[in-house]
Length: 328
Length: 208
Image 1 (cartoon, rainbow over the protein chains, first blue to last red):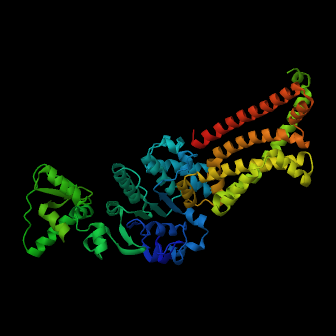
Image 2 (image 1 turned 135 degrees about the vertical axis):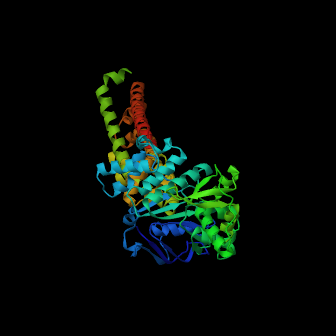
Image 3 (image 1 turned 90 degrees about the vertical axis):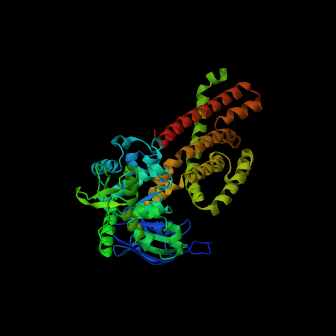
């Protein structure tokens, strides 16, 4: 676990009038996935590259667990921070196994420990063990990106920096890789900074989003708060915060149950929920209302049942409750 | 051909002499071209002027360069070696630059981002990936050097050129043929060996 504190950093590239970063501060909590979101040229990649010192700030400082990153030699710092980029950048002359083993080798791990770790990682990112001896050019784009993520995680760094890692793959595969990243994150609880310009990707992955514009962080909040309480017109329009489907996507089914109860106590009447009929769809409390709504429409049932992880029924919600949950 | 058979010992001695001159020139030339090319690949400010200078040097006819070096270094092996080293630079340096700059920037970015030092990046990533292009440059340099070193006999550096010059001045066609056949054999052998090495390295780098 490692928290990252970015304190008042500024960066201007030679020959450019406008600073790439203008007095940026950001606190990235340990174990969370923070998305740096913004239009191209807003400084999100620059900010990311300051953390592992691929770039140096003109002023300000960056602390990892309270330690200024400048107190460490850059190569040593970087070996403790995973790094994955859009173009992946696998070493074409090395096997998949050797690619994944890069940082452990730099750290001087023993061969046996490295072999075992490469095996673990292939499994974690969903690649067959036989991939170990194959070469990058023999892999599909999705497989290459998985190897890139395995390589970034190889030495079990507390921090992972990801620069549009899924930007170059087709939408279907992107959604799958996003799911896999979320699954990995649930298991490993790394401190992740993830750069993207894709709003849907940000809403899907982020514990918190830092929305950037012209070298400044405009708003830093949880995805739902970003949508329901955008700080200004830029945030509202960039996120298309008024888009109801988008809100449904970041609201959980459990919140519809809460909205129903809140409405009941406010209006002093029982919500008229059509009783769940046989064959009514069942959704998990953690599912998004977007998928809940889809299930409801497809089943033609008037209501669906929300259950928790153990299958206990939390309540039944209908169209009205879903509407209340996203309009609050 | 009879000359070649009857004087095979003498021809072999000349061939060894020329092979030795060629090899010495290439080892020295590579030792200079590798760091020079690396520097030029990294710094654009050095790259342009350096390539321009090497281009100019390359346009001086080889025989003229041999003669120009006589006042400075006299006759024999040393001036021949210097001239050959200078000639090989343009091909070698250019290929080192092309090889290094042809590497996918994302690969270098990843290497840096994962904490490789400059030296580790060079040894583990840049050199292996640039190797096929650098080796192709070496093959061309070897062929150019074998051809040019034949002329070095003109300034008493020995080698198979001796047979050619003597044959021409004395009108002995046999000697000319023997010298030409031996030089061609040297060049062809070097070419085949280098092509094999290149193919092997290239397939290793591609990941086969």
